[in-house]
Amino acid sequence: MLPNINKLLLFITISAIVCSCSNNRFEVDTDKVEIPAIRVQNLAIDVTSITEKNITEKTAELRNKYGKFYERYVVSIICDGGISDSLYPSQMLQFLNDKDMAATYKYIAEKYPEKELAVINDELLKGIKRFHYFFPKKQVPKYLTACMSGFNYAVAFTDSTLGYGLDMYLGEKAPFYSMLNWPQYKTRIMNKEHLPSDVMRGWLLNEFDNTSANNTLVFHTIFYGKLYFATKQLMPNAHDSIIIGYTTKQMEYCKAYEKNLWGYMADKNRLYENNMRTIQELTGEGPFTAAISKECPPGIAKWIGWQIVKNYMNKNEDVTLEQLMNEKDAQKILNKSKYRP
Image 1 (cartoon, rainbow, N blue to C red):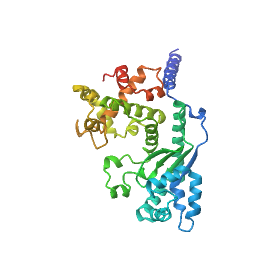
Image 2 (cartoon, helix red, strand yellow):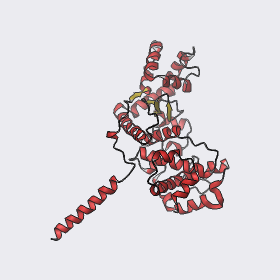
Image 3 (cartoon, rainbow, N blue to C red):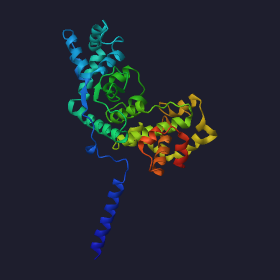
Image 4 (tube, rainbow, N blue to C red):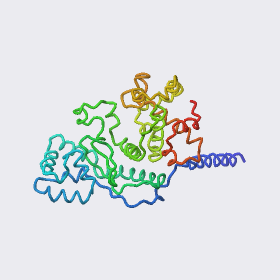
C-alpha cells in the first residue's frame, strides 16, 4: 500500500504546484487576446535604401509606409524642417553617408538580422496584447517600428507607432558607446536582453505620467514602484533584475539590506521631502546611490517602491492593474501595503 500512498502524495503535491502557478491573477493567455493587426516594420533597413538618385521616390514611399512617424523621425534627428524643407535631401544624404552613421547601420544589420529581430518583435507583440488586456481603454499601436535613432532615444510612441532605437541596444562593447563617452553603468544594460522590457516601460511612461502637485519623495517612490510592477506584468518572463536594470549582486544587496534601506527612506520624514536634489539622489541614474553607499544600487527608491507596490497588490486583490496605475494617492498605497520589511 505504501507505493500507492506515495503516488497519492506526489499527485497532491504536483496539483498544489499547478494550482499555485495558475492562480496568478495577472497571468494572461495572449493567444486569446484579440487586437487589430499590427504592422511590424524596420526603418533602420528601409531608410538605407535612399540614394541621391532615388531620394524623391523613396521619401514618398517611406512617408506612405511609415505615416507621420517618418516625418517626426526626420524632424527629430535629421532635418528640423522635415521632409518638405529644401535642406532635407542634402541633410538626409549627409546623415546616411556619414562615416559613423554608416558604420552604425552596418553594425545594427549584423547585430539584429531578420530572425533575431523577429524573436524580439514577437515578445513585444505579446507585451502589447497584455497591455490591451489590462488597459482596454488605451490605444494600442498600429505599427511596431525598429529604427536607428542617431543615439537620441530608446523608445518613442507617437501617431499610432511604437518605435524603438536599435542603436540604443547594441551591447556594452559596441564601439560607438565609447566614442560617445557614455558611462559603463549606462551601457551595461544597452543590449537585446533589456530591449523588450525597456520598450514596455517606455510605453507605460508615455501613458501614465509622473506629474503631481504632491511632488514628494514618497510620490516618486510609489510612481516608479507602479511602473516596474506594471512592466513585470507586461513582460512576466523577464527577470526582475532585467526589469529594473540591476546586476545580480545589486539585487542581492537589496534583499540583504531591505530593512535598512527602508529605515533610511522612512527616517526623519525623508519620504515627505520635496527637495528635488534629494529625490534625484534616490531615484536618479548612476553607478550607485551615493547618499547611502557605493555598494547601494542606483535609484534605490525605485526598488523600494516596487516592493511596496507588490505588497499593496498582494494585500488588495480587488485592485486591478488599471486602477493601480491610475491611483495618484501614493500615501494610500503606502498605508494599505502595510510594508514592513
